[in-house]
Amino acid sequence: MYCQECGSKAPENAKFCPECGRKMPNLLMEDRPKRVFTVQTALKDYFQGAIGLTKFREAIRKGQIPHMRIGTRIIIREEALDKWMEGQEKQSIAPISKTLQVK
Ligand SMILES: [Zn+2]
Image (cartoon, rainbow, N blue to C red; front, side, top):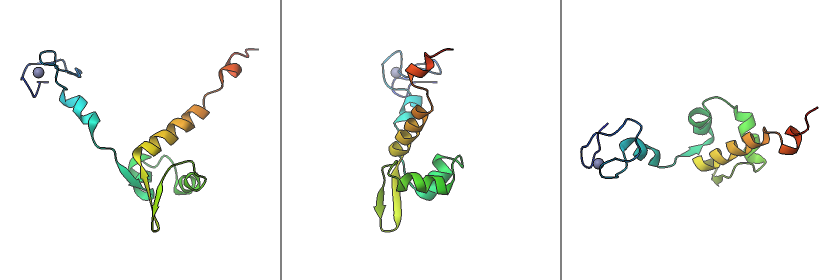
């Protein structure tokens, strides 16, 4: 991998050029614009079929996922989906008090 700025060679996983300190292309990819989904595209592109339409609509209806309504269309930001997923993951972890109760 070569630095786009100064052309010097950098390790493959480097985030910054060792010569000039510029961001390397693989880091720039992380700066891609955040996406916006509809219900349909979220199921297909974000969850990739991991959850179904009924479950997803239920979560939206219960107010678990921040979204906006434009006419009949529901718009959801990628960040909102990330946060919802994080919240679900946290719920799956036992509280520390429980993990300490070893019998
Ligand atoms: Zn450089």
